[in-house]
Image (cartoon, rainbow, N blue to C red; front, side, top):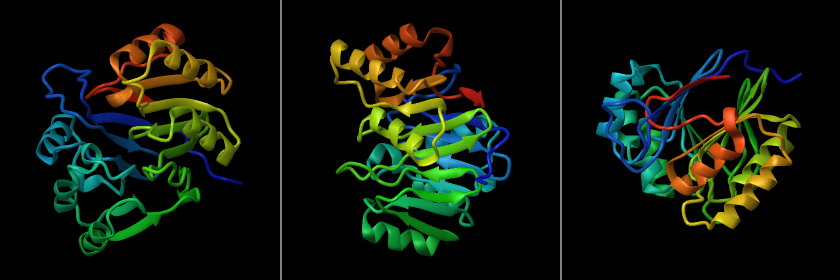
Length: 241
């Protein structure tokens, strides 16, 4: 039987929104994830210096990171890689095969291990999975199997937030307790966003925390639609599942 996490804590450490005062929002996304047995840094935002400053202020030591998970190769999600690897050369890297082959080979020399993910979903460790890369962008999302349901963390959701959520449910055959990250709806019309909300309703998702590239209109519509099951994103937000 697949092991599940009894508790997962997610802290947003980089975003273009600030949940707590005093942080500098920059375009990009990163979250520090604590499970029963491991810690994961999901993406690195666009700027390593600011990422490390945010982590320090939030009391997070980069030396405690077990796994660095990169969702896709865009600058606003891998900009802080050098800073993190320099601060912790003993971490295990999980990267999509859409990342530059030269960069992957360089990172093999700088990290403890490197796992390259293709289109197939992959079991990373205990309760943690990758969806496998999706769409032409080659983006993977993180799935954590918890006692309360699945936690799905997305970078930019270029493959479509509905498709990612469906893939997570298909892999583990469980409902989603929390869907969070960038939903990539910033250029979508009100009708298109409403269609996404209706499609997600069919999956009976517990809580949502849209941020980064979701867009202000979509975030507002998610808040109105989910009500008390909406969680505000931004730097400093901490969510326990």
